[in-house]
Image (cartoon, rainbow, N blue to C red; front, side, top):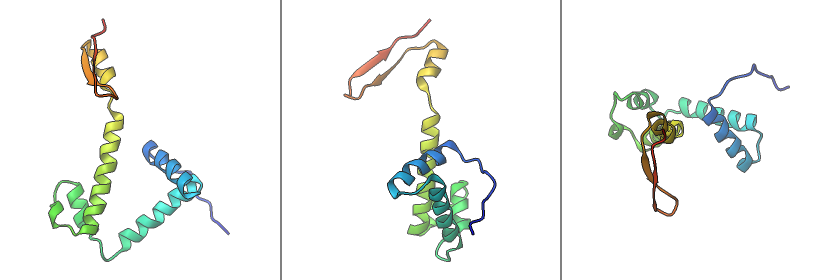
Length: 119
Protein backbone atom coordinates (compact mmCIF):
# COMPACT_ATOMS: atom_id res chain seq x y z
CA UNK A 1 0.00 0.00 0.00
CA UNK A 2 1.32 3.43 -0.92
CA UNK A 3 1.48 5.87 1.94
CA UNK A 4 0.42 9.42 1.15
CA UNK A 5 2.20 12.42 2.50
CA UNK A 6 1.11 15.92 3.45
CA UNK A 7 1.26 18.56 0.73
CA UNK A 8 4.66 20.17 0.29
CA UNK A 9 5.37 23.57 -1.20
CA UNK A 10 8.07 23.63 -3.86
CA UNK A 11 9.86 26.58 -5.40
CA UNK A 12 8.27 27.47 -8.75
CA UNK A 13 11.46 26.73 -10.69
CA UNK A 14 11.67 23.22 -9.21
CA UNK A 15 8.03 22.52 -10.05
CA UNK A 16 8.41 23.84 -13.61
CA UNK A 17 11.54 21.74 -14.11
CA UNK A 18 9.67 18.69 -12.80
CA UNK A 19 6.81 19.33 -15.24
CA UNK A 20 9.24 19.44 -18.17
CA UNK A 21 11.24 16.42 -17.01
CA UNK A 22 8.10 14.40 -16.26
CA UNK A 23 6.84 14.83 -19.82
CA UNK A 24 10.13 13.60 -21.26
CA UNK A 25 10.33 10.64 -18.86
CA UNK A 26 6.62 9.70 -19.13
CA UNK A 27 6.08 10.27 -15.42
CA UNK A 28 3.61 12.33 -13.45
CA UNK A 29 5.00 15.41 -11.73
CA UNK A 30 4.83 13.75 -8.28
CA UNK A 31 6.60 10.68 -9.69
CA UNK A 32 9.34 12.90 -11.15
CA UNK A 33 9.85 14.74 -7.86
CA UNK A 34 9.98 11.41 -5.98
CA UNK A 35 12.51 10.13 -8.53
CA UNK A 36 14.73 13.16 -7.97
CA UNK A 37 14.36 12.80 -4.19
CA UNK A 38 15.50 9.16 -4.35
CA UNK A 39 18.50 10.14 -6.47
CA UNK A 40 19.39 12.89 -4.01
CA UNK A 41 19.04 10.52 -1.07
CA UNK A 42 21.34 7.97 -2.68
CA UNK A 43 23.82 10.65 -3.63
CA UNK A 44 23.96 11.99 -0.10
CA UNK A 45 24.50 8.49 1.26
CA UNK A 46 27.23 7.74 -1.27
CA UNK A 47 30.70 7.21 0.19
CA UNK A 48 32.15 8.62 -3.07
CA UNK A 49 30.87 12.13 -2.40
CA UNK A 50 32.04 14.44 0.40
CA UNK A 51 28.92 16.49 1.13
CA UNK A 52 30.63 18.61 3.77
CA UNK A 53 33.23 19.76 1.20
CA UNK A 54 30.48 20.45 -1.35
CA UNK A 55 28.52 22.50 1.19
CA UNK A 56 31.65 24.50 2.03
CA UNK A 57 32.27 25.30 -1.65
CA UNK A 58 28.64 26.30 -2.15
CA UNK A 59 28.89 28.55 0.92
CA UNK A 60 32.05 30.16 -0.47
CA UNK A 61 34.24 28.71 2.27
CA UNK A 62 35.93 25.91 0.34
CA UNK A 63 37.94 25.40 -2.81
CA UNK A 64 36.21 24.04 -5.92
CA UNK A 65 39.57 22.70 -7.12
CA UNK A 66 39.87 20.51 -4.01
CA UNK A 67 36.77 18.53 -5.03
CA UNK A 68 36.90 15.40 -7.17
CA UNK A 69 35.12 15.31 -10.54
CA UNK A 70 31.87 13.90 -9.10
CA UNK A 71 31.72 16.57 -6.42
CA UNK A 72 32.56 19.31 -8.94
CA UNK A 73 29.68 18.12 -11.14
CA UNK A 74 27.29 18.46 -8.20
CA UNK A 75 28.56 21.96 -7.47
CA UNK A 76 28.29 23.01 -11.13
CA UNK A 77 24.69 21.76 -11.27
CA UNK A 78 23.82 23.72 -8.14
CA UNK A 79 25.50 26.83 -9.51
CA UNK A 80 23.60 26.45 -12.79
CA UNK A 81 20.32 26.21 -10.89
CA UNK A 82 21.11 29.23 -8.76
CA UNK A 83 22.16 31.24 -11.83
CA UNK A 84 18.97 30.32 -13.68
CA UNK A 85 16.86 31.35 -10.69
CA UNK A 86 18.64 34.69 -10.43
CA UNK A 87 18.33 35.35 -14.18
CA UNK A 88 14.63 34.50 -14.18
CA UNK A 89 14.05 37.06 -11.43
CA UNK A 90 15.62 39.90 -13.45
CA UNK A 91 13.36 42.41 -15.17
CA UNK A 92 15.57 45.20 -16.43
CA UNK A 93 12.86 46.65 -18.66
CA UNK A 94 10.63 47.26 -15.63
CA UNK A 95 13.52 48.66 -13.59
CA UNK A 96 14.54 51.10 -16.32
CA UNK A 97 10.92 52.12 -16.91
CA UNK A 98 10.39 52.71 -13.18
CA UNK A 99 13.54 54.83 -13.07
CA UNK A 100 12.49 56.77 -16.19
CA UNK A 101 15.66 55.75 -18.04
CA UNK A 102 16.20 54.59 -21.59
CA UNK A 103 18.03 51.38 -22.39
CA UNK A 104 19.23 49.43 -25.38
CA UNK A 105 19.53 45.76 -26.19
CA UNK A 106 20.14 43.42 -29.09
CA UNK A 107 17.16 41.71 -30.70
CA UNK A 108 17.10 38.06 -31.84
CA UNK A 109 18.94 39.09 -35.05
CA UNK A 110 21.66 40.95 -33.17
CA UNK A 111 20.34 44.36 -34.23
CA UNK A 112 20.39 47.26 -31.78
CA UNK A 113 17.03 48.24 -30.28
CA UNK A 114 16.82 51.44 -28.25
CA UNK A 115 13.97 51.78 -25.77
CA UNK A 116 13.42 55.46 -24.95
CA UNK A 117 12.71 56.63 -21.43
CA UNK A 118 9.04 56.83 -20.60
CA UNK A 119 7.68 59.83 -18.83
